[in-house]
Image: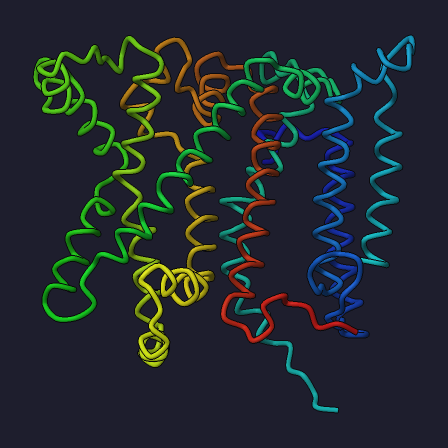
Length: 102
Length: 294
């Protein structure tokens, strides 16, 4: 039935994480409703806003890293391009930072 | 504590199913396409972030993106001042106001592909009014042969099509200013320019911001008009982002890179929509900075 979607494991894992995040946020919201507050971001945000902004930032960070990986290897005279896992870890750290302090 | 009835959530279910079928499942498929090299339905290879890297380092894409940004900024630079000027010169009340509104809104009612066709004929030297007039004046103009001419024609076409939107938004903003402001300005002996600078412009801030973001996003996604008018040419002088993407996906059948590129495009639009949404939320609220400081 879903063969046309040509699923791969990493993409399935990715979407499962997104779904779990949404479920988790819903449960959290019911247990303790979020408050609009102002952190280092220029606008007042709720928890959901911060998750969205954090995920979007993470996506842009990873894309930027992929785009610059060739140049980075050149500048730092590495033998091969730096692993995408580096930017993944950085972007997740940024996500947590935005969620907590944004 | 007041008990909350959560049954209403079931009412969202039909919308949820529709959105899943029309947006979420296709989007998931695009993500799957973007990480694989699909040779045939049975033969596919996982390539990781390779397509993203290829797209991010694609020189042609970079030039299409720059072309797109230049175009969108040019659209704003022309349409916003022109729209304000148009709104300021429109009559404020009476039948003239209604007539002006209808006349100004006319071009907004024309479908995109028809706009492209109108300008395609309009610009031709043999049968088009503009082309023939320019030829008569001795101007060497050809939107199919000269890159600059093609670019300017696409820009003028967009200005013709969409400046009325900016004008209508500004007009609505202007009409919402109470007469007391103008009376106060008259008492102070304010000049016409001072009235514009210190009353009309600040009062139009909200609608102007919406106009700027709407026009930026729409022009950023422009496809049909340049496609009909110039087909992206001459060369690729008017090949904007959407058209480049379509060329890749439909023309060359490079589904992997096209999928990766669609996702990047999606992220750009998502960011712009987020900014637009936040602006629209803030417009008209008492706290223009939108911040309820702790």
